[in-house]
Image (cartoon, rainbow, N blue to C red; front, side, top):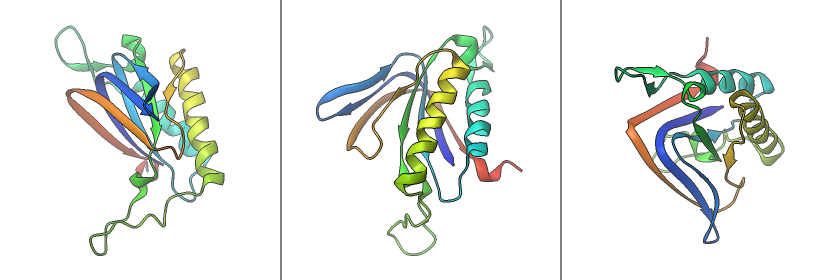
Length: 150
């Protein structure tokens, strides 16, 4: 699994002209699920997301986590994170997980992260045409790939 985590002042996802999920200060997380990903990947990524110290402390040093600031999270599924760009100019998505794996792992990530931070995780809708809007605070953007953890 691959995540793009952005520290945000606010973020929202709109579907069919209506706001489906919105947050204030916190994390906007794009979630890509690849073939072969497992519950172990989800659990590792949830722990990393909840504990990642990318919010400033009183001295302006990135030393606080989403837990420390009681922030919010918006998680949006994004199969394009699995793109292969090795050949040509058209990305290939052959490594993206099918719906039968991707949906349960995306939902599990959201549920486990909600448990970890003690509040609901706002979400998009898997496979929907979504308009995502955010104010990247910093900017701070972190990419995490569960296959690179060892």
